[in-house]
Image: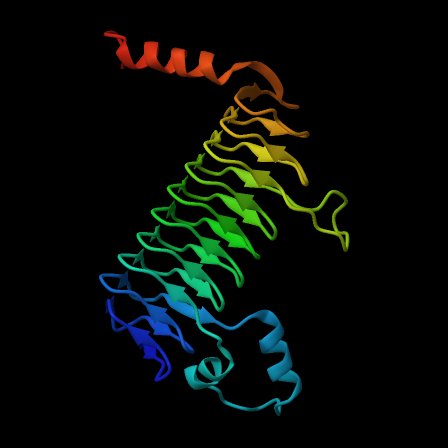
Length: 241
């Protein structure tokens, strides 16, 4: 059973089983699949509500709707089933989400960007335009990802140097970076523009622009130009599988 707030506005298609809360807006030609929640209230709002209400209250979607500040979806967005988008999230035009994507409050996803199934933007996260995030990627609070970035499946970014501390630090991935599958980026580092992180790498320090790093801990192995030449040769091989 879905729910569509009287405060929400949709110029797209919303499947009956979807839940749209607060003053959320869904742009023209967008599609919101069933069992998806748009505008879910923040943890702080839920805790405040519990403090000020009796224990045995029976609450429906109307309660969540009252708490929600809503979220904004641009034109031609595709939100597949079982996604949860918290309040105060902005998805620019042509954003696509796979299934079971979680996006927390304060996040922004840029134009023409894709986020694969089971990925999490777990806090206030900024993602640029034309970026491709594959399935099961984890981006914690304060992560900043540039434009034209590729992040491979199951890659992990971290934000706490001494867990569990009270000080979180941003990890920054600049424009045109490639992050391989299952790579791990430690807190507070910066990946320079056009750098390449090999699959499975453990990145413990800043990576210079236009360099390729691999290993655990990751070390520079060659340049982005050499990487592109290796890719060109690989793509042109006649014996490739």
